[in-house]
Length: 76
Image (cartoon, rainbow, N blue to C red; front, side, top):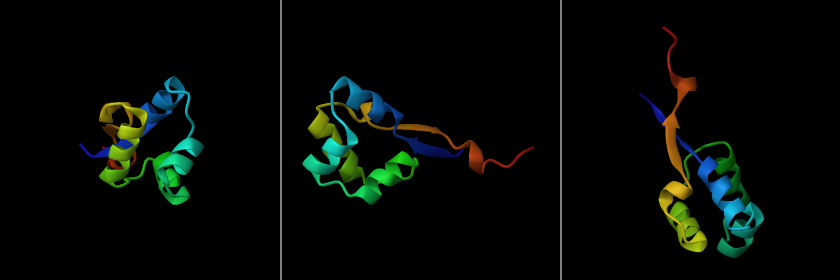
């Protein structure tokens, strides 16, 4: 089984903490390209995820989860 990152938990955590992605960009100096990668479910540096966890005072599972990558599975 192939896995990929999903940042859906981050969306929920941002809402709960009354924050936005713009806050992350401004307060943590996260680049727009990194935010774009996260929106597309692409990998970002673990240090970025850790910084977000510290900033939002949350656990890693509140930012990222691993889901099955169904697009890269060959059809049977």
